[in-house]
Length: 248
Image (cartoon, rainbow, N blue to C red):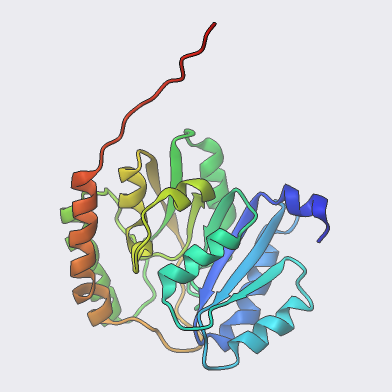
């Protein structure tokens, strides 16, 4: 990719992964199929110190996918850190995120881009909404409980914050306060910063390979302290409109 192409990148697709060796190649191929000839883009994978051969699969994919960049964590740091480091490394002004397990469909990214084209300029986050879930009963129940508790406490008017497919402005994201698990609260954090958010129905697929890294414990109980922290941030926030005074 030459310097002129790098400067023209409009979209960076950030994908955090941990032990997803069998999902790497198929998901990258789907991203390419969804975005080629539509937008100038790059793909930024962040390997969160995988213990399988995920990194080897990514290196192999780089040889056939010039749009692919790979960032590797030297110690396991979690999904929020992986997303943030991917966004920091990204060259696009807008970011699309996908979970690395293949349950998000990259074919939904063009739909999010279309929604952005129709939306007002102050909408900085387009959040995927998995209307029909393809998870087991326990995972659906834990998500329903977590979403209900979060919605009542934060009042973020978002039906599904756990969906990995999102589209947001890079600069707006990097203005947000950073903490572990922050990726679960992006709509509330964007709204706190004074931006609007929009939930967009997307597809959801069953996991075809690998094992889920999340369960009832880390979806709900670990998140209680995070919810309290985000609620505190919202209560303590203050937004002030400004204008520049010139000598004219």
